[in-house]
Image 1 (tube, rainbow, N blue to C red):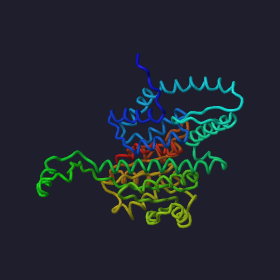
Image 2: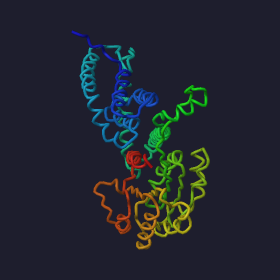
Image 3: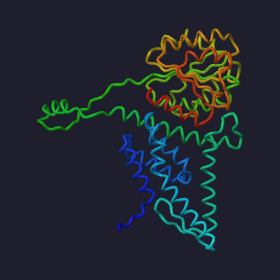
Image 4: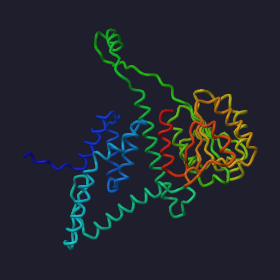
Length: 379
């Protein structure tokens, strides 16, 4: 009867990467390293957090997102059942020990004082639960004590997202080997096939325009939406950024600096009417008349980030949105209010614009912003 060799956690994680690759997931050494980093941070102790983290790293297409949960459960369910059983035994064993305890993580054994083990386990569990809680906390309900933690988590998650966008861009530049062109180029070099020619399915990257509502009712959301846009600007071929409250401001020239804090500082000191009233229709009409001919075409994706609480003429708003939709490739509206339980777009502003939108999504917490990656990944 064959003896089953106990695998370390790293080996299991590599097996899972190969398991996904066999099912057409585009994974390489970088994704494996990212997965190791997630595990080393202790996320593996919380099954859901570990699953969400790997999903963010491994999934690059919509079909990957759709299949990942099933693959994760199929591969890891037995492991987590074994871990829970082992943990019960460890707890019972720790009760019998007086001074020291053994902790095994990532295939390495450490001997720690019993008190330190308890403190370490408690710290890891609390940290993982805190990250999950903050990820799903509405931006408008973040208290002062959590604000710094939320900003750190946002920075980490947005950075991971930017890396995934970068990898997708690199993968898009790869293609199948073109044998005919490889041989043709090789003849000119004495028959040596030094360079491989590749067939590329040319796909021009879309251009995106973000129009962010910075009125008083959006105040608690605007800061995080602005941070989100700053991450995306590194990926898109061209990204134009506007803010509005009672009138429109073209913010793109301020984004050319590399220092994010300097960008935020400059925007805060330069953009007028922050946290004031809302004239959505008038601002979008201003965008059309001043910038429409330059930044609207069938190559452009327009993303409006607003709660839709119009204080101006609703007919003006309706006509502006209808015109933008006609002139661009795709029109997306992100509304923080959609994240509230029981929300319905019954405000006059939203009722008038809904028929002209290609997508209407929430943008109220970190999780909702990260989900937008699926919407933008093929842009």
